[in-house]
Structure formats: structure tokens, C-alpha cells
Length: 126
Image 1 (tube, rainbow, N blue to C red):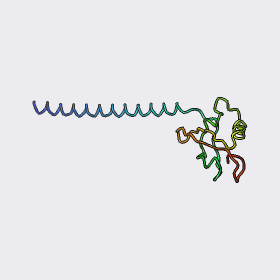
Image 2: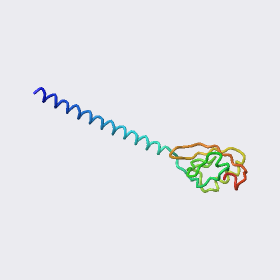
Image 3: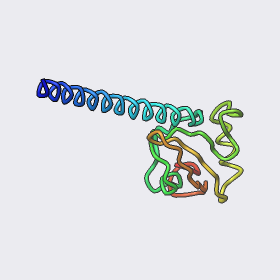
């Protein structure tokens, strides 16, 4: 009788360990999902996407990359952006002065300093 009782208690103990291990994994997964969702929701909406960056241009030297999603370009943001002419105006008025540019790259917010200036290529940014 004692042996049967010990064997049963051992099975109960193992089952409890498995149950708690599964619950702990589930809780960790739920927390990770909640954190990932919170991060994705906290990113501001982008109003433009970079489709080309010319090598050796001011945009390239500032660190701007293809597929960066622009959230803020100087004074232009999602709330006052109407068309690309808004950005062109800011660039023309900021020639030689640094602009603060915020982009979303690989799901993370990145701040860049971009100075529009004349260079060997076309335009002030490239």
C-alpha cells in the first residue's frame, strides 16, 4: 500500500510540475505579445516612404535608407502633410541648415540630422 501511495504521489507531483511549466510558458508568451503590440502601437504613423537614396548625396551621408518610413521631416509631420511639395518647401528654406528627420526603420523609431545642400548630383537631398 505504501509503495502504491508513493508511486501515485510521484505521478501527481510530475503532473503538477508540467502544469505549472506550461502555465509559466503561456504567461511569458502573453507578456511578449502584449509588449510587441504596445511597441507597434506606440510608433507614430508615417506619411511618406523613401524609395531611393543616391550614393554620396546629403541624404545618404545623413544615414537615410531605402524603405525608411518618414514620420517627421523638419516641421512637416503626419498632421500637416498634404503632398511632397511640403517637403520640397522645407528643403529649399533649410539649405545649409540641419533638419531633424524622424523615420521608422525595421519597426524602430530613428532620428537623423539631415542638412540639405548643393552637391555633385541633382537636387539638395539626393
